Length: 149
Image: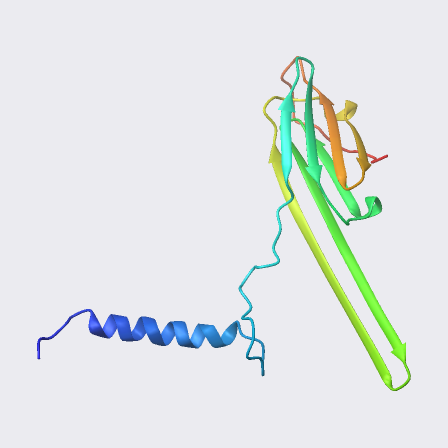
C-alpha cells in the first residue's frame, strides 16, 4: 500500500462536513437542511446621477415606512430598516403563535458630493426614492435625517 499524505486531510475534511452538516439541519428533520445566512438580504439599489442631482432608488418590499430610518451624508446614504410579523391562531384545542423579525443596515456610497440638508425622500409600493442636489463646493461633512413622505 502506498502512503498518501493527503488521506488524513481528506478524512478530516469529511468529518468536518459531517459535523457541520448536523449544525445546520433542524432537530428531528429528515428534510431540508438550513443554510447559514439563507435569509440574509441586501436591498436592491440603483444610484444614478443627473446634471444637478444624485438619485437613489432602494427596494424595501414589505417594510412599513415608519420602520425606515434614512440619513444622508455628503458622500453616502445610510439606511436602517426593520420588519416584524406576528401570527396568532386560536382554535378549539389549538393555539399557535409565530413571530419573526428582520432588520438591516446599509451604507451606500454616492458618486458625487451632495447637499444633505436639501435631500428629499418618498416611499411608495416598497420603493424608496431619494433625491439629493449635488454640492458645488467642498466643505466640512454634514448629515441630516430625512423625513420620508
